[in-house]
Amino acid sequence: LKPSWLQPFVARQSCAAQRSPQMRPGASNLPEITPPPRRAAAVAAAALGWSGRRTRSNRPPPRFAGAAPGRFTDALVQSAPDTPQDSESAGSGGLAVELSLENMELRRQVRELESRESMLQDELFAARRQEISFGRSFGARAVAETLVERAAKTTTAEDDFAAGLAFDTGRTRQRLLYLYASPLQMPALGVDAEISTLREVLSPASVDLEVKVASVSSLGQAAIEPDAWVHITAHTSNKGNALCLEADTTLLGESICRLECAGLKELLKSAGGARNTFLFVAACESAQVALSFQAAGVQHVVFCPTIVADKRALCFAKSFYGALAKQLSLEHAFSIARCAAELTGDDAQYGLLSTDNQIRFPVAASSWQTPLPKFRERQSLKRCVEDFVGRREVLRDIASVLGAARRLVLLHCSASLGRTATLKQIAHLMTMPGRKFASPGVCAFFPGEAPGGLLIVDDAESLTEEEKARIRQHLEHDGSQLLAGCRSADIAVPSGEDFCADVKPICLELLPLSAVEAAELFLRRCQRALLVEDLVLPGAYGGRDPRERVQRGEALALLQKPILAFAGIPGKIRRAVDDWSKRGSPPLHGTLDRLALAVGLAGRSMRPLPELPRRSGRRWQ
Image (cartoon, rainbow, N blue to C red; front, side, top):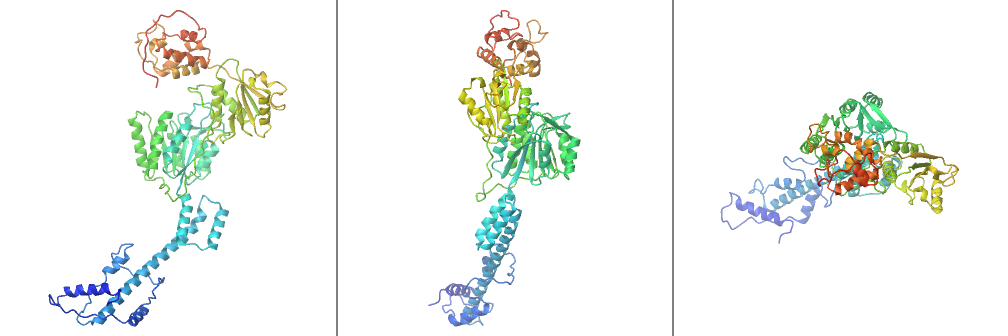
């Protein structure tokens, strides 16, 4: 009987002996192998320094040419000879001892390599624990307390590795600062749609989206963020030589701050240059602004050197950030977005200033990493009225008064001029991300509550005494404000008894729509394109085809005179155009008197019009 530890080597030696040229083929007598005494094997093992347990040696590990990492055992087994060099001179007992000693030597070398690998892992874990102090997600005091707690208790290597990864997640996230400026005096930008789109396309990547109002101070602070990418959505003026930002006073969009390119360079220079690596300028004719940022030190700038529509810019940004979120390089992401814009009929041009087009977003967080912070949703309010136009002056005035911390603002109009729709629009503008009333619970419609915030009341003249008492209780909170809509400013009462005795009511009148605003509303409600026979009186075509389609700019100019028949009442315009569309949109023949008469308004000059066939055409885009 042979011990179990020697049987594999006996079988190997037997096969080698059969293959040896010194052995006669078919020989029946093989050399008899006698197992060594147990004491001799123990002495040999002690001489090699093996004690039967795993130890860590300070000697450097042996080097094996061609041995791949993680395959030390295979490399060592392949280096063991199958037979002794001199099989004839070796005795049977000496052969077994030699094989056993070689086997123990190989096992010892494997243990040394495993011990060396374990020591290197311990050093890696220790180095990673020292990097905790540089984590962004923890304060200095919290980091110190964490280090003291870890030093006080004994942890395994697996625990240290998991903890190091948890701290490391704060450094792998990319920050995207979204700065927007949409002053109330200028056309409104689709900020809400753009924020929702960026949240959607950036969700697969480890990107934190931070929304702020673009002002001089916020832009200067964003420029010195070394680890943040910046996205700016704003208007430009003076043919792209000025960036239209919002004032730093109240952040309600009531005033504009035009930052010239020279002032922008001075702002960036005062901070020692921009420290951002990437900037996206979503603004028309922004080439000069992009060059100013590049000269200040921004390595990669995406801009639009031409005029671009708001929806077109949103589609380009969606394609661009979507490609970056899928780990494409900056060059490839820009190429995909520009190609998609060209194929969809976008006439705008887009540019890229970059020193290295191979930058990417960091790798997305794995399953063992902590989840990204959820973006705070906007508070739920009454929905805005569809096709809301105009009212820029009254919106600016209300924002200015609320920004000045006035307690009571009264918006009054005797006729139905869209007071409710205006209040809803104001509520949505005041609660945009980064605004004064953006936090949940700070703005509400009555009978809701907003302690210390803005409470909006419509039809204030119909309030009961109990409801007025609730409003007075709201005004007792520090910082509370009230925006009330009514038919007449008389509900304020000079003595202030209805709401609060020491409150000064600011009365603002809602005026009818101007001719340009009314014409814009008319075109938005139309369900087909307007033709020459709709906007020009019969006999005044001047050789033009009556069925020729009129472009939008010309239609706005031709509608400003006939639209006066509606007296600037938006509700009448909506109802008249909708009824006209239901009847098949017959030709208007240059006058809107019949439409005004159908909704109860006396037109400027009423004359009988012939019955015309029903006709439908292409919709306005």
